[in-house]
Image: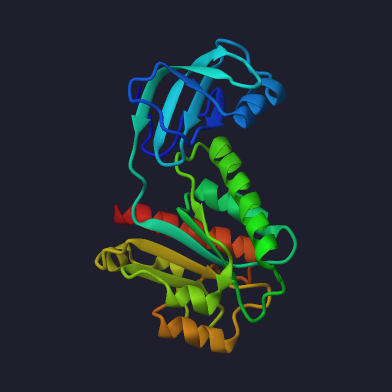
Length: 260
């Protein structure tokens, strides 16, 4: 079976199975939650096509052997391990108001982001204590799993606990190209950024910073520049936060593909 390096065939059922599976396994028993979802919510039947993935590039393809709502059994017909796309595409997103972060996470997974870093900044109106932050991360992880199933993305991104912009910048690993969606006059048009210029630096990550509804403050733009973040223009108009995040990620994904 020929399978794209990072995307599943989109027919049939899909399940998340982040557990070790012997290389020659003929059957996989899914978790109670995944079994219940397939058997009860999706009314899976014996013989239906099903695919499972571990979120790290390992995927299995086969059919439902037993549609048990507590322990659905999948008959394995083929399996494949693939490598993730390089460099890693990372979104550093200042938390927007309302439920917009849910939509951003979902679309970021569809585009192929490998890391999502929620941030606080001076103009961020979202306030979370440790317990609420943990709950939000759990919710976003669930959304990311569902987005992988829907889109066929074989890789589940890591979603970090929200931290302050300054804290994140201070902990950035080396070998990363850093971009921030910017309305500043000297911002470079992201869509026209030469792929060869970025590829020559052999970056391990392409990191996109997107500010809150009120944008980054002048002091924060200065902080970003001191850490080597390049301001980039996202189109010709002023974009809402979710639109800016998706536009920027899509442009960086295209840049990544041109680098390959």
